[in-house]
Length: 396
Ligand code: PLP
Ligand code: TYF
Image 1 (cartoon, rainbow, N blue to C red):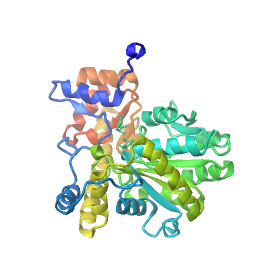
Image 2: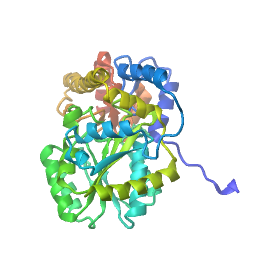
Image 3: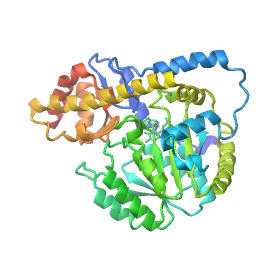
Image 4: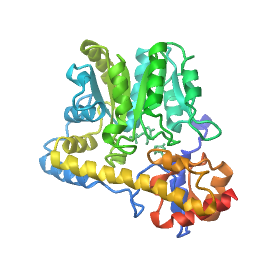
C-alpha cells in the first residue's frame, strides 16, 4: 500500500537547526529559526511563566478535557490583550477567541473555516510570507494567491501591494501580518495600514491578520494598533494570535483564533462552526500553556514581570539591529544595510543573495535562511564586528 508514497524534503528552516548543531566551529552563529535568544544564545523560559507554572502545579485539581473553545479565562484575557481591555467589540459580545494549538493551529482553523463556511473564497498572501502560510492554506483546500510586498530591490512596495489588492475578487481573504513581518521585517506604517483598510472596504475583502509577534515590534499596545483599527472599522475580521514568542511558550502550543462578527448572534453561529471544525482537527486544545497565560494576564504582579521581560527582549533585538549596522560602517556597508535598523521584530531580510548566504555558512559558520532572512535575536552583541567582517567578505 505504501509503495507509492514518495519522500518530501524537510522544513528548510527547521533543518538549519540540525545543521547548526552539528557544526564544530566554536565561532558559529545561528541566525536561522525564528526563536528569541538572549545574550547567552539561549531561549529562556520567562520568569513569569516559571512562577505561573509553580502556582498551577499546586492549584490544578483535574486533567479532564477543556471545552472546544479552550480555557475561558485564557480566551477572555488574550482577547483583551489583542483587542484592548476597553474593546467595544468584546463588551458587545461581537468578538471572542477559540483556543488553538499555537498560532499555526489558529491559522489552520481559520483555513478550514473559510473553506467550509465561505466556499469559493481565495486567500491572498504577501510575497514573500512565512512558508507555512503557503502550504497550510493549500492543504486546507483554499486557492492561494499572492500580492506584492517586498520587491527584488528589498524594499517594501506599498503601491504595488495596494494596486494588487484593488483587483482581488470581492469577498476573498487577505492575510496581513499585524507587525514584525516574517520573513522580511518590513512592516506597514499607520498610513499604509489605513490605505490597505480603504481598499479592503472598497473591495469587500475579509482580512485575516496573523499576530505572532505582539510585543516584539514597538511594544505590546503599539503592535496591536492596526488590529484594533481594523476591528473598529470593519464589521468582520479574523485574527490569529500566538503566545509562542511573547510568552516563550513555543512547545506548549498556545494560541487562539479571534473572530470579530457583525453582531453577537452571528458570532454564536460562527463559534458553533469553529467548535465543530476544531473537534475534527484536535478535538480539544492542550491546557497547560493557556493556563499559564491566563494566570499571568490575570495577576498584576506576574503580568508586570512578564511585560518587563518582554520589553527587554524587544529592546535587545532593536539594539542588535543598530549595533550590526554600526559594525558594518567601517566596511563602508552601513548605508547598504541601513534597512536592518529600520525593520521590526526578530527577522531581517538582509538583501544577501542565496550564494552569499551559502558562503556565510560554509566559510564562517553563520547560519541564516537561504532567502537572506536573518533572525536578529540570534546575534551576539560581543561578536558583531566579526559578523560584519564576514558579511563584508561575502559582499566583496
Ligand atoms: N505566523 C507567523 C508569521 C510565524 O512566524 C509563526 C512562527 O512560528 C507562526 C504564525 C506560528 O506560531 P506558533 O509556533 O504559535 O504556531
Ligand atoms: O519562521 C520561523 O523561523 C518561525 C519558526 O515549520 C518556525 O516562525 C519555522 C518553521 C516551521 C515552524 C516554525
